[in-house]
Length: 148
Image 1 (cartoon, rainbow, N blue to C red):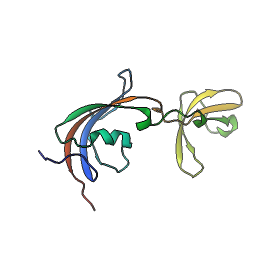
Image 2: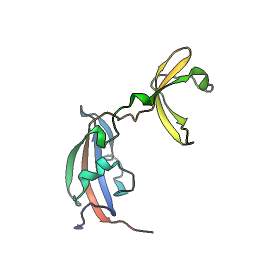
Image 3: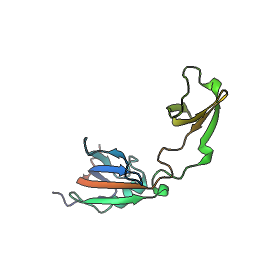
Image 4: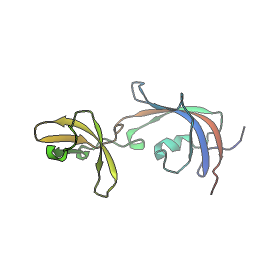
């Protein structure tokens, strides 16, 4: 077992489970391959990386991550009204997650939350915005990241 501890420049392999306030599991690697990433590479929001610092292989923990440190608070300005005419190919349905082009030409996922004759209301907030999450981890391995 290595004596490395999680810090910047370390490659971390771990199992995680992400839960909502009521215990509903949102995401988990338990039944799949463990996750491997380099601390600070952008794979995890900083609020999820911070509590891992100092942990080493074989350690487990459970952390409560507030919205500010997870996916942010819900922003009412991220809910947009689009014209029904913008949806030529598909019939918009409430609950559908669609990809939209953002002004910079990137992709932005949005959830359709209301539809009437003329308008489609789309929520571009992250689905986990405004939620306090429980982040349970089991650290399997920590080692210096390979630089290519």
